Picture 1 (tube, rainbow, N blue to C red):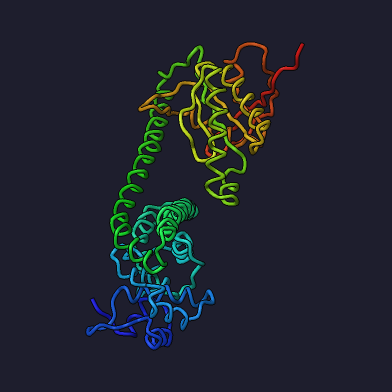
Picture 2: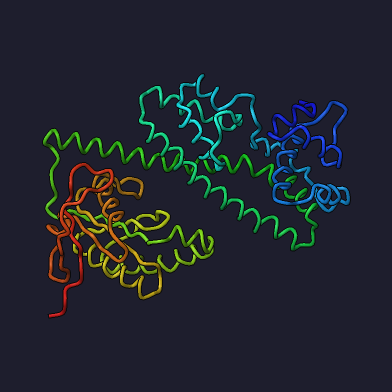
Length: 402
């Protein structure tokens, strides 16, 4: 499909005069039929370069000398770059039934600044609107929909930034180290790697996402079944319930942002050695890593508390960021190497509530723990996020030597 200069300007979201200037300096070159979708993407990209202070004439000169190429924008894998539609946010709000303030969060969720009502919607944003509109029609709370959008956006931002760094270090920098010029590198990378990788990346991302959905949905189903059994009076309590422990590292996300993924990987390696050795000594096992922490299973509650106290102390001695821990005891359901149920959910919430250096446990842990190696100090009923009613928590500490 071909476009005229005015159409290029509209779909790229740039001024017609800017397109004329790109044509004048030779950055956009028409075919017999006009301009391509790649030219639209090039116009939008060069606008970003221009606003960053890079001279258009310099870009054009580098292209003319073969030192720079923007031909990669013609590749089909760049079809995912969005173009601007002829609909404004105000118009889409009126036709979709999505409140304008909520609709404008869609643009923020994909990493751009908050739009104005008369700004035109991008085509990628229109793909998000039907699901938002369905939630609105079903009576979902606006605050919940907004949180969903922002969490999706922030999580996928981290994924895409990690992907960009991975591409730079493993493809671009490696090819240039082999002697390729920037133009040769970009042409080779897009012709031989990007076009093949783009659909594979989509499939891999969707596969990981569906795997996490299976875990989350299974947890929700199991929680509902537990509640139904408890209401029916057939939910038996265990005499010696196992314990679920969550250990989180304070500031892990900030450390990753400040020092990069390499520092985060080194932190994870050091923490992994500590938690594996410590949990094994106390008849427990790490179940899974959760970004900034670890989930453990312990057959006996007392062992779990002793291990938690040792891990927090060892992490501090090793110079790692402070850790905080939450534990709860009760029945758990095992499936495909993972544990599910209300016990798991409560242990996670308790960990969220704990401060750096703290090991907080539920009353169920205190009741199930045996021995005098640990002392407990009640910190009173507390309200935990996502948990109905107050829960009595205790701070665990190693007992003073006799």
